[in-house]
Length: 173
Image 1 (cartoon, one colour):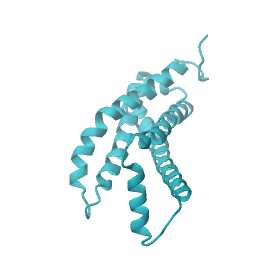
Image 2 (tube, helix red, strand yellow; image 1 turned 180 degrees about the vertical axis):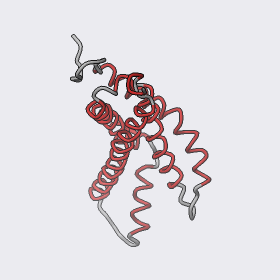
Image 3 (cartoon, one colour; image 1 turned 90 degrees about the horizontal axis):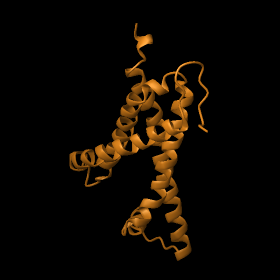
């Protein structure tokens, strides 16, 4: 039994196609994010804040990986474009959300950097352990919000443009 997106005529986009499209976005993202980070990390060093290069590389990587996947899966996406792109984008954003929540826990200095940033913005502030944990949760929530927001917006735009670059043959004439 196959799950299908409803499409009038033509090929149907199966759930497996949605999963393969998201997997393609993830693989392409993994292959282009690191090289972009290496280039932009030092190129966009603004006042010693290397976060700009990292953020720009994430934005470009999110967009390009969705654009390439949209091009690859254009034939399947084309018939029910908005619905297919929406489903692919939501599944992609869900995967990004999981990584945004899990990955900071594996970074040894994550909590220390959150604390350092807070204390730099609020000199002389003192928080209890419980308040620090709450602040770190809020910081993680804001990071997750940013990553999911970028995945949704740039994923949708990239998939749409990518699918437009490779229209089915009958529409090219």
